[in-house]
Amino acid sequence: MECVRILSLKGIGNRQSAMIRAGQREAARVWTLCRDRHLAARQEHGPWPNREALQKATKGRFALHSQSVQMVTHAFLANVDTAQQLRNQGRSEIRYPYKDKTFYPLIWPAQAMHLRDKRIVLPMGRGRPSLVLPRPEWLDQPRACKVVWNGLHHELHISVAKESEEVPRLETTNRHATVDLGQIHQAAVATNEGDALIVSGRGLRSLKRQHSKQLGEMASKRTRCTKGSRRWRKLGRTRAKLTLRAERRIRDLRHKGTRQVINFCKAHGVESLFVGNPDGVRSKPCGRHHNQRMSQWEYGRDIDYLQQKSEQDRIVHCGPHGPCFTGDERGTSSRCPVCGHHHKPKGRNWRCQACGFEGHRDIVGAVNMHPIAYGQVVPFPKRITHCGPHGPYLRPGHLRRSSRPDTGHSCLTPTRNQAPQDVSLRVLRNTPTDRVHGVRGPPA
Image (cartoon, rainbow, N blue to C red; front, side):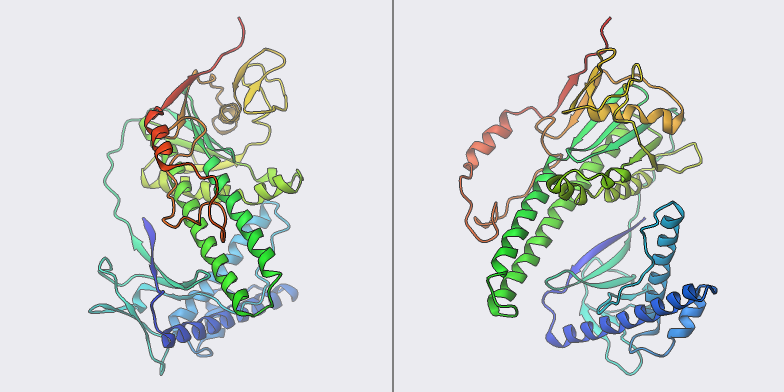
């Protein structure tokens, strides 16, 4: 299984930084040429250029290594294929690549990288000096890599083959599970054996809300500055630093939440996983505050993480869709799992007005996915395990506090009304590590 390790290039010299910027401009020119060829073919209703045609059109025309140019053309064709698949699914708003790019990441395949002692040598083309970067200790052989700008400095993304442990194949258990993704709760899992899990997403929402407030504060401060001034540039660097910090913390919690889902499936012998795709929810206008939350909902990343982790842990699926697949979940959260009555719920507790059934709203959505995915009606779980070390409404992992006292709430002002550290520790010690709640069924 392939994974990516990030090597910071914060300490490289000005000469190397200038080489990277010049190479990224050339890579952007390659992308623009591919875009123009593809656009001309669509307008003339002719055959679209394939890999061979684009490589022939870009050969020897740019100040880059030949294999780096080829990797840009491959990335362009991959974007075209993705756009075509989405348009075939009815997403008519999806456009083929059309924007002009000023910079584009530099990409090298594994055969272009050279390792010399404690250095990584990346060629920049015939007659041009190579890019020499520090070599980490864990890099034992050439790998495919990419130089990316993160807003503050460059990073080297190295593709590493992760060795997976040999997991013995278990006997067929005929156990499957469905996953209902959400915002307040990152994921709700229900199996056909009556087990359920809820992973809280309130930590993710709080981080995103905090970052949005920081961006608004930075924007208001930059409006009072002259564009291009020293303070204007300083505020821009601070904004980029806060954005990187928020992305790291959100990515950490997202990985921890999806890992809890896969661990739950492994513990209960689940061999098939269905993930509901809530794509249609974003098209409904719900006010500017909720629209902002919906636009920040990265359910696509949750689906990708679940698929990667399920493949890594070899969750076997006996059907035609693979180990982890997605599908439409329309109407699953508004239908009673007992009598089928449709009702729009309010709050987190789903209460049927026809039969009196009560249950958790997200688990109701997960249970109603079983007939869609597997054609089987399953009973509502009697016991729901809430993920998180402190109960149902806390995050699946701990948030790391910065050592600086002024990074808790505001980006430029010190934190106010912050609880003492000993109070937080006392609450953590006195809180149970796991809670299991019962659900009341329909009246007799």
